[in-house]
Amino acid sequence: MKSEDTPFEGGPMDGRVLPVLVGMTGQPPKTYRIPVPGTDGRPPTVLVYRRVPRADGPRLGFARWKYVHAPEGAPRSGPRWPWSRPGAAPGGKPDDADG
Image (cartoon, rainbow, N blue to C red; front, side):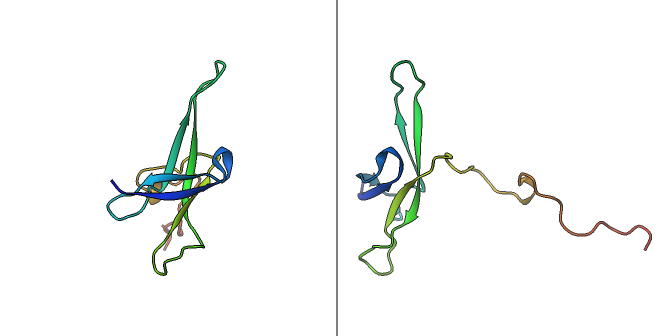
């Protein structure tokens, strides 16, 4: 499998560069999870990093990526249906029964 050296920003991994496996399209995954075992009886935690484009890409036309720490965790996965948005009010006007 092919890998790409990808820098990490923010959080405990700030400044490190790790080889990340890329997919068939040549892109690394959108989120990168790093499991951290718990010490001294603490529960294990998972560090979550989001993929963002790097501005210093040497090749024009090809996106280079970096990972930025996401302290809020991973974004919600699954389909995004318009009726399943949290806190969304129904749009439009109600029908006029009086005419």
